[in-house]
Image (cartoon, rainbow, N blue to C red; front, side, top):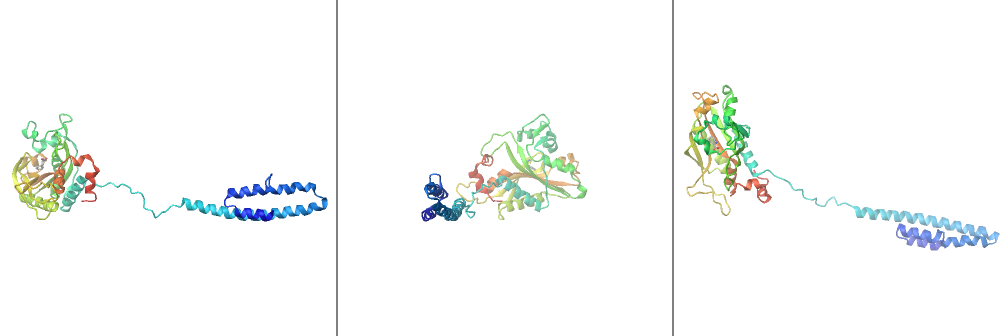
Length: 339
Ligand code: PHE
């Protein structure tokens, strides 16, 4: 019986099978019990012999059982570990990464350019006083040119700024001209009561530029904007100035950039004249200097204002300003990782 038991133990290939073997041999109804029951029928002198046989069965059984139990436990542990193994070399799930918006990239590139030329970057309020947005920009109440910029009013004196020009007045008021020239740009959102279409938006972004010091002339504006045009659109660009009108500059100019190839089908930015308008500017009106407490006899300045959307549209051949605001990933992802 011991030999049978040991063979059965060794044949068992799982903890469950091993337990079945134990029941089969040593359980209540097991094979061994039949021998134990026979004990009472034996003659006294034969009993020790059977007793010994039973205990040597137990010894052999237990030894084989424990050995096999160890092997099976080990094997089962290994199987479990193998099934739960994590392959750390497998590629991970791709995390979707965002990127800077094309308008942000365009603004930051322009900020970098002017910072390198020694300009400060100045922030101004989007909710602005009529006083700064219009009065200080030489647009008194009832001035017809106020109509150039249809305005969102909050109340009679407070409005959403229609341009970044009010930051000119705010900055000139603060600047100490005995300490040196004022050179600043001011990027930010502006608001106009326009109907949205491919080229108009009720909210867009501008960058204001202002330099005030002794002996600043239109030539300084021209040189600065030529540098801007070439840095932004390519070294072979030329610019030209056309007379224009803004109440806060005199003379006022509109600046065109020479036509350039934007590449790709439907690239339509090259007008037939070979020039395309990119921004407005001029010499700061003496009255604007005076209102901000700057001596217009001693100091002069130039100012310009550009639309960030317009620059980005020209540079990247974007045909509809609304693309910038709709957050369609198919649009945004085309400008991932750019500058
Ligand atoms: N503020 C003008 C506009 O929004 C642009 C401008 C700025 C023109 C500075 C001249 C000087 O159209």
